[in-house]
Length: 471
Image (cartoon, rainbow, N blue to C red):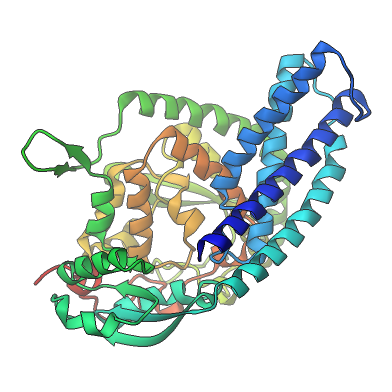
């Protein structure tokens, strides 16, 4: 994207922000005064402060939901992200102001504003995306990969909408480690995709991308993700990066535990009517147990019983083999179960796990011991995700899918562990709401991967090929 186009899109984003803020300001005046013309009193400046607070909060949520990620998000996702940002921003302002006023006025006055804003979001997302694609014709792209496993892992990255900007016209399989052997192949391309290539060659490609101002997309290895969490220590004559087993600060653990306990309790109280209705529906359908208990793993491999609303038949695993759900085609899932899974209602009982301290709101999803053992055999680094307590949501749940293979989930979990903080936890909690209605986030795994024996479609997994280790 050239400078002129970049400036135009910055202006378009600013225009959308201004429209959002203006719509809120009008709705706020109606909320406070019942009218929206100017009042020349000193107290009127209070409205400006509220509007400034809304702007800051809206900016935060826009960043959380990637509301302006043109070219990498679908039009529907952009509009939904912007709408979620506005809803939560208004909710935050309403809650804070109501507490300061010691009264909670009727918030329905904001509803017409949100409906109007939703229309603006849809139009802006559509036209901004169309202009973006026209301003950025497909770039001639090369994919360099080490094995078929790496190529398959990169496949999802090349789908829409990214595929409209980066068109892969050549694929090059390379298992060596010498950059000069691939330099001639990448010259003339406008973008480079790299998957599984050895580190020495990959470093050369990354420097080539920087020197020639060419976009480079690199599928990370576990070592890359771990290195992101390294600490720079300048006590030697050369820069040194230090990392080890994750040790979180005691004050973070204490604050997070209080947060988990309080909001799990609040969540249980608020969701109790939904839990009651769901329990009755499950019981009436087949007279089986309402709650399904299953052994899972949390920090340091500790075992606990996770609670979920039962969504499968009572005899779903009558053969004694642990297996993941294969999605809509899984005949073990009951009609009631399909609904509660789609709406994520089956996860609500895990609030009791959080209340007890077995889980946290944010963390790696707890895995079944039987499946985890199979993953350990295929790549021992899967145990690295047990450095922190398991959670209800996290990087893997927000940015990945249920059908993501265990190696990809591990990478997401390590990204969270490296970036663990209260700010990250809050961002992920809010970001979770954006995936509740997405069908792909609950997409089941393939039949051959359900038992964990063949998680990426190959009978045997060579860890050196997956992780890019040097032989």
